[in-house]
Image 1: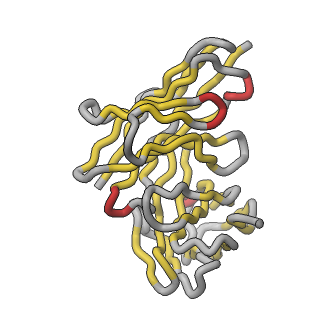
Image 2: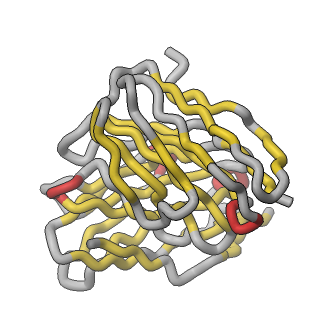
Length: 113
Length: 114
């Protein structure tokens, strides 16, 4: 099993550009989420989904959009990148219920200039 | 809503010494608690978790943590650290009513010196 796969691993954008960070999991997990990691701030939840067709906002949703058309995929879209979105982004998935642990991808390092 | 506080941003320690990484949480509902470890340029891996039952939880690599409900703490301990334990450690909490929605602390960097 590949687990949680994120692409690309690195990306440089100019302010105002758009892009989509891809996330796919092959474990049939219902729940998927996106976090951003910034120095001294830990991981902050951006958006999450409890199943296909259902998404909700986390702690820091502004500037990001998500959709969940299939169980496997949960892309994160930046419509107009800003320097404040320079960060490392992690996708995670889990089964619902009873404190199931999150399975993380290896991250996407995004720089916005 | 839940929140997590990790007061120590960095903890330096000599090899074979004991270590404790502190974590305090707040929540209006009962919680599940987790510790994750992140090695350089990698994603996060689960070290251990507390769901219910015994307040002392043992995890991988010789780590353990103790849940203290009255002090709302979940401190991570290891009796003797190795150089390979150098990494960043994150405490996380989720409410039992939304167990998949983890809220993370700011992380503690454990630096093990020879």
